Image (cartoon, rainbow, N blue to C red):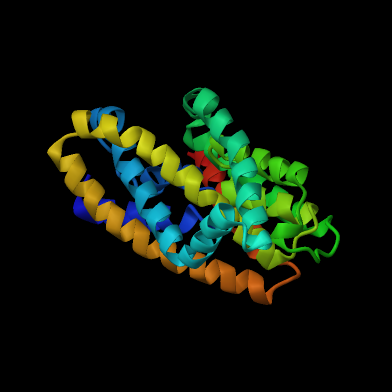
Length: 274
């Protein structure tokens, strides 16, 4: 992998990790779309460590963007002086558990089964329908995050597990689940972004020790470049996404659904024709 490829892949990863368009699908489709033809040895031994570094960049960007929220949550949990922050913290803990457990048990199996260009493109199209119908069929949300029940938080956490299949979006599934729980658009997006931090960081931290012992020096160098690029673009992405949902309480998912249909449909058409 060249420096240009690493920067481009990190840029796409940083944006799509938070936008509801499936970063995993883009990880599968990016080499295909640009015709990179990456070395099979690199893909087998070094691609996962490289992607892990990108995830850590995204997690750092989320921590920086929401640092005031996390500080308030921790202080509320420890002191009990802010009941709203304390409740939100425990809602996040409850919502994180299902996806974390399912990911630990099934992630490698599911991604190895479905991580092909055709399946990623197909499920990306399905993801577009989930975004579109999930918003069109919901009621008008009026609740804030702290007003969720712990059962609803658990269901939103379970929805994240869809992202284990390349093509389904973690943020898209959790935002749509938030809509159905009655959250406002901005509140649903905020809860999804806050949920992403421990999930993304946890997955990265688990793999980093292995990467230190097995990855090549070149992979570590490319990973460091990708870490910075992914973090920068993830920060821009979360800023743009929160602003978008703040001003669009209706049809906010429509552009993302159309994008999923177009990209997934185009890749499938190329496969059929070619």
